[in-house]
Length: 318
Length: 267
Image: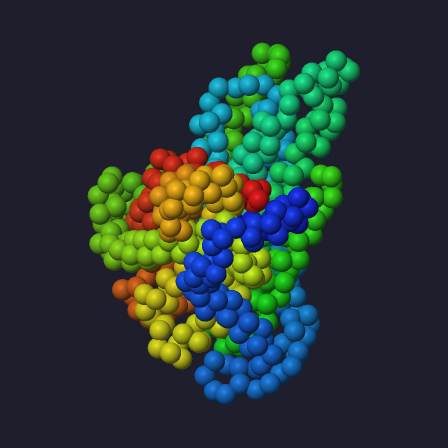
């Protein structure tokens, strides 16, 4: 699984109280306070990071301005690769597919998670710890393994078709990953399965922190389960919702291994996504500049989305 | 909270249904991996057979080496950097921190293409370093962020007391702060291990021809493309690939869940 949990929070520095800023000026004073030595401690980590992550990112931006096949000498292309991302039908479609996948990876799991967590939260049930362990399990299994499992489920002679046949719906059976209309939703459903547990566990933790007396008060006011949900539960977990959306939306954009292992972008280009196009353009077609351009665009989109979600989450929470 | 018995029953039904939904694909792999088919006898012998035919012994060895290296190196570097950024004040500390935050969000897709061509030009592709070092870089970004927060939250007065006692900076780090931050470090270790073990794109790109350096997920990817005689051995191979992380998860699940969720919430 390549979906690294990348917490985008930058809250600490933004909300650092003025008092701390004052103490910072003061703490430059004491002679025992080490300062210069700080550089020595940061240096090894920063060096590896700069050489193997930061520099390649800058190189990606640089290469995105060239037409290059990876072998011969590249030619300057200006912004034409960026134009191609916008105009090429296949590439434009790949970003559209990523948008559809966000629905499956983020929105559906959010709804599922909200319903499940609030229902479970209302009554204390036994075995919640075990439940949490079980529904979180997909998160730790390599995406390649998950893809192998779901390919079997979707196969022409796989689980879904056997069930359909058994209940007399044989006419509905099909090769789910191979048909134009069904391939993208089929891949998306894997994402829904993958993220629902994570979101539920996250929301359950958030709801566990809601003070009980808020519910007591709501009940004294005669609120039913629905009113209780919209008046108390939902507003209290806004922070968790923002976190859940950040994690799942970014996961929906980093689906290279899932696509590579299930559909290779097919049928046609029905399920191709930007993260798969990066690989395909660079290593199958030999359009290295264009591949870097897609990678840069993907990075910008990820940064923008996590920025917007954290900002909106913060504003709503205030 | 008081709720009716029917609501409680309902909750158990939901719990069980969702747990089944969440585990079915994973369990189906394990079960299918033990079934007999044209190529496989069934039972645990399938695992041994897949180990032979699919060369999973070699893949697991590479994965183990890569994961150990990435976890060990990135943890030590993150402890050092997180300590400096979390407890010391020096010019440019914030700038360095923000630069490293970029690495937390940066997708591997963006850097893997230039990395491949640059490492190829210095003859490093198809080597252990090409798989390991980019992952150290990514893990160090998260690790620094994570441990900076951990060291920040540990009491300043402890550090100051130790310093008054004449403890050197490195003594304060290794004998005072690191023991205090042990839970955070364990979380970092298990997360880094999981991410490295499960990584697919970087080994796929960085080791184009050297089969001996294929990691476990990569080996499974190739095996599933080449081995089409049946499903049992493929499922057995998938089980072998997933098992190490799942075992660690079952023992340290609190660290996995807390790390993946708090990583985004925590300061």
